[in-house]
Length: 81
Image (cartoon, rainbow, N blue to C red; front, side):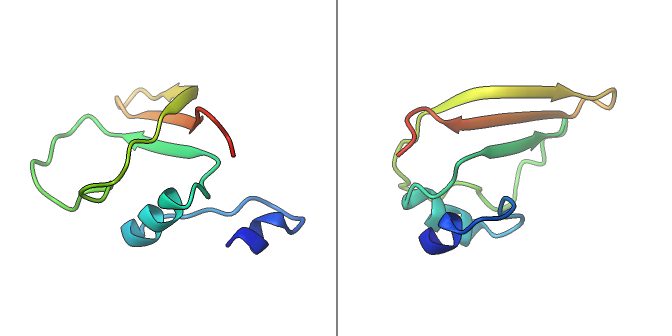
């Protein structure tokens, strides 16, 4: 993944893989976090962040609010490596 990120071209997008997300997060390979927050609490389901994952400090860079109540929050790691 590090080699792929160094190549010229467009951004890489990860959607729907919790295991891959946590592996990339552990290795500090995520440059932008985009979370879609829906105004519904399911009360069950899979966790996004793995149990025992270390702390990652993020800096909010953008918000988008929609009439449906959905909010998109964009964060970058507070300290880029």
